[in-house]
Image (cartoon, rainbow, N blue to C red; front, side, top):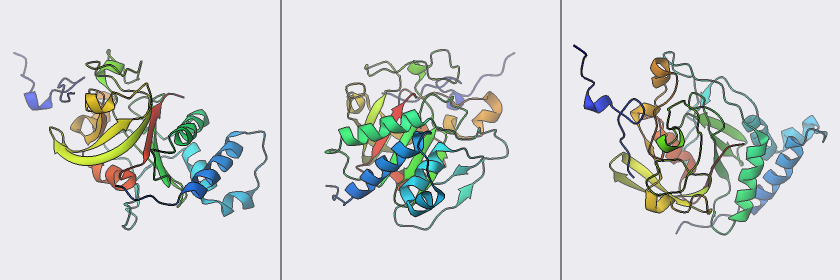
Length: 267
């Protein structure tokens, strides 16, 4: 007789669908301008970059780190706290190194320009590279001021990957689609809901402007923990939300805060 799977362990994909669906202005124009200038140079391989230029620019260093590879998952810094250091991937899980396509970075920077009136804090941005499978760290944080990069695992929506392959197949902005949406999001306020502590997101593009109505938020979930990879080789799926590991939520909240850009797309 087959053992009955506890309801608490069922999830969207493994199988328990568990989702349903002011800020002070800071002077960051210089940071944004410098970041754009250096990124454009760094991602153009035909343009020579000298070592001294890179060392003198925190934004260039941040970009170089984001575009490079890492064998560890680096914890982002809290806004007013000490560094929490570098956290190696858990021994029980096989977390693939972070990689990043410069094309996606260009798209994120274009979104930062396009929504300059809405994104009031430009010192930090988050980019989700949905070209990568859920087994790889693909939620990338870029700290422009400190020149630091960090990356985490994040789940995509079940409607974006109906066969649960671990790869996002499509985006959708439709209600009831249970899919991830593409585009620029503005981080909002915090609340406690059915998934515990969560952060609201506002969609800034026509491809994600139903985010509020669909309750697309950032929250934690057990199916986004790194140890899920050891058993399944991929994360579980949300119903469109950005679900991170249960022990990573404070890091995400501490890094992003309110009024910053989160950009999600495929390269």
